[in-house]
Length: 425
Image (cartoon, rainbow, N blue to C red):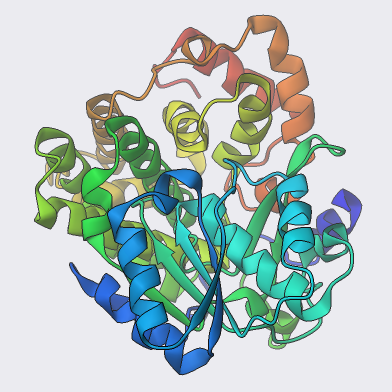
């Protein structure tokens, strides 16, 4: 599997600049955004079918909000099946369990309600219900043979962007790594984004998802611009940074400049929650075409080793990967300084680029993201193995703006382990 992905990525030569204004966005058919918009869910689902499978987790399944959604669906005559045992990081065995439980049921539409794993489960459920077979046969890009059942995504956290993206990420215990099922056919028919869902998010979950969204925006904004030839978009999901993804990154980063710290200061501030969720949505639009890069490649084996929540892991790694990438992305980081309102017109481009990175450090500190890998439970002796696993994630490493090797990953990890935030070259 990794060999196939690696060969695909090599077919798209990397560039530093967008050529000819190339742009690509893959997105849901309809996006409904706003406080209280969960009231739209029942009508949306009814318009797509008369029997719905709701994919969620145990925390959401016992909430009053979920009960209201189920009642509203039934009031419209929609029959409801519920799978509420979705686990964090979505293991492959979880998908197989769902398929066994719903075997023989007639399902018209699948609804994902929850965090990233719940939304990813809903995506892969549409594939399994439509085509069946072994979930592993869909690993990679463009392996889903055609359209699937209609999908409705309803995020309850402000971070993963999974409501927008056309990838389902699954942890395969046999491979000991996360694998993506990526296809335009996994895009939602409708996504309903209601920031009121996030008002009850615990502080730790708010921090993890916020750091995840911030990392998405930064990795997408600094990713490689691959400038694909016409027709490439028919066979590649991730075709690099482009003019349209930059538009979403800029909007998202400007919001993130204040939103996360406002949420930390006042968790009940619905305006701050809305800004954070809107920023996460913009990030989803961006990474749906660019993909993510070194931060996510390194976090996957760390998460498997320490069972650290995904967002906490990427938040801890982000300052060090930014410093590693800085020499090849000074203009982009300097532009970020303007978006984060820390640019000084009297300073050099490099000074402003460093100011942007320092500002991101401050936001992560406000979220109480651990400052080094040792705080996550990583031992210095684990670093070579982490790097060895991370370099295999070629779908991610191929997007990084600065070339990655196993040795350079070890260097990043050593800096992250000791908390070295100097301007190392």
